[in-house]
Length: 175
Image (tube, rainbow, N blue to C red; front, side, top):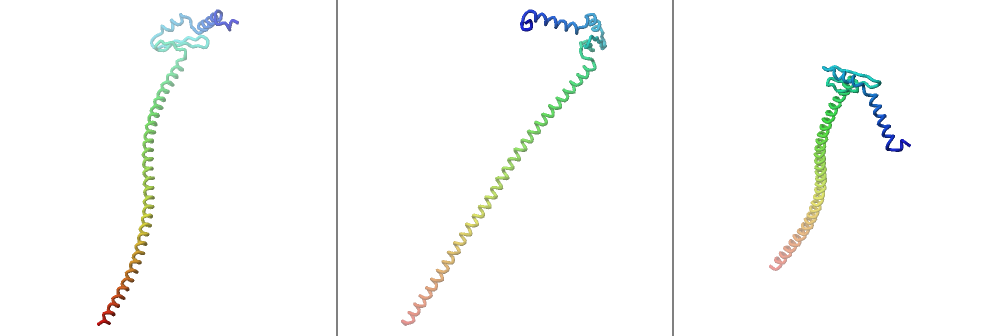
């Protein structure tokens, strides 16, 4: 019932537990003053249970051992370098993608031109074939007209010769 209630005993219990935890982690003040008075890059360490409190060269309190702290800082700097390299790679890849997109557009344009020219050549070949058929038809028509007119000319020339012969025969008989 005390756990369900949000006021009163639970708050008091929580603050007691929290302060008990803090006091378990906190070294005595005299030890802190002694460790804080160490200067000149010396590192002071105090241990109590599982927690080791150290002071670095700048007299900052470190809960982590010095070797682990330096390894963490080294890892942090390596991560920053890696992130910079990734950003550089990303910008390089973005530039590459932009260049490739531009080239792809040029290729697509040339491809469309080639398709257009191929279609034009095919249409030109078809137009030539149609023109050839048309010219062949005209030549055939003109040849037939020539033969008809030649035949008519021969017929008319024969008729003229016959008429001239008849006229001469008639002129010779009258004389």
